Image (cartoon, rainbow, N blue to C red):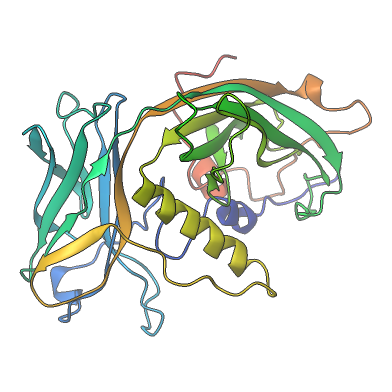
Length: 353
């Protein structure tokens, strides 16, 4: 019987952050560091967070930036004295620190409202105070439909290994804006699949490797048609059962649109040796007190709409054989998190067996 060992490194690469200092929507390095090990100089800070018109709580992450010249290459959470979110109508809330650098509103706390303007402010232990530029929450439209097309041996090849194939689906969607004057959107792709191992069953996500942003070009009636979201590989992991493909559409202000467009440009440039790096990614923060120190990242307000479909084993062409997974000797006791770092043992509310 043919056996193989699941390679965790190739899955970790698919769940990695999408740029050096931002687009780490779902993950943060979990490393405990004593306060004494913090650098004595003002380290650059990264902020990642948003508020939406959907139900909270909302999470804001404050971390150190990667220091490419330091011996340690990890990032760590940064605790602040107070993190405040407020709008232009006098509503405000002080966020609670869940773990170092991870802050959250309360479930029944502040909620985004279309038309209002939102800001956060926080103070670092050394006296530095930062404030985001006010960001308006604009209405969104919606994702009308999601569809997929089979292709074999794609240009962006899925690395062949035991249990994998060179086959997959390009996932596309059609979307619309609320009105013909709105054209600034960010789309997020998440493909969730179920995997059963000897020790456990888990649900693992795949996300888009590069931010999907509108290009300000609208078709008639404020529609976006045939936008490619991502490539979905057909292999023994993803199609052990089926895949739940979700597309979120997020409205953006002009400043948040410029940020995500710059992140996209830099990601594409990093993958193309003939394309120059496009420069520094803008931040929507200003420093209002303390020793000058760089802050990267974004806090923004958004309205979110979603649509989703299942892609099943029956959608795989009959000419393609989905490999059956066999664990190598000694791998039987490994758990889902060993293979899929962002997986969950809890069945998602949207999943239907």
